[in-house]
Image 1 (spheres, rainbow, N blue to C red):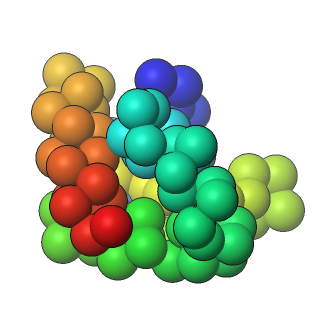
Image 2: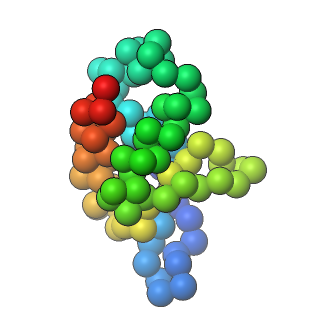
Length: 90
């Protein structure tokens, strides 16, 4: 899992951005590529991440990202939960 650390928010909480393809279940990526277009996959992943506090992160430097306000030790659990939600929607 690749992520990029952003500046902390106003209250000092850490923020991390993860590319949406890293949030898709690895074993289902080929199936998702065949069934959905890239914008559809992005929208599905954002919708799943929103349920867990993730937000769309759109900058020119990092397109296709989803930002989470979480500590580094919480990221693997968040990623697994988002993957489960994305995989369940098929």
